[in-house]
Length: 104
Image (tube, rainbow, N blue to C red):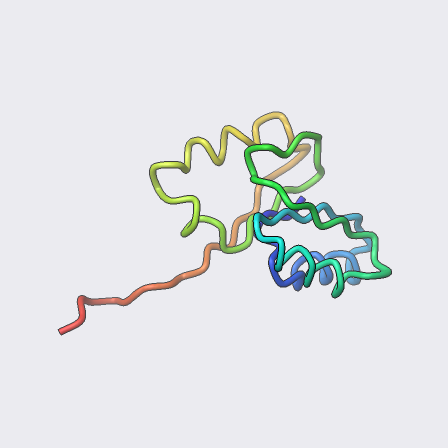
């Protein structure tokens, strides 16, 4: 399962290079439509849903650029939502958006 599957690059890469079936989730209808178009013909399902609504058990859960949207105060909710869904591990690739020092 891949949360933050907006542009479909991660689901496509996983399906093409590792032969896996992928569930990608997003909360944007536009991103869902684009991702479905880009993933046509691959074993990928892109669903419109909040990460807290996902049910099922997965070999891997990958979060791509979600943490800056989830927010620090919701990290415990994010990880509790994954409890019981994993066979092995959680991978996360947070997007780093910000500045090293305050602007002048």
